Image (cartoon, rainbow, N blue to C red; front, side, top):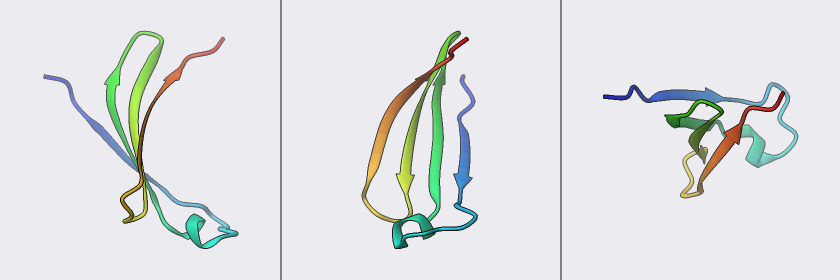
Length: 56
């Protein structure tokens, strides 16, 4: 069973109303050279899935 990781990110000096909301990050799957994640901004319905790749 894979362990899911959760993070909450906040701007230190937000410049807009949207930046005042926290970003909730969920790491869904870790691969050798990348990982899949989902981000949700604040308590809105906005949710985006993406993949980040390792660059050397």
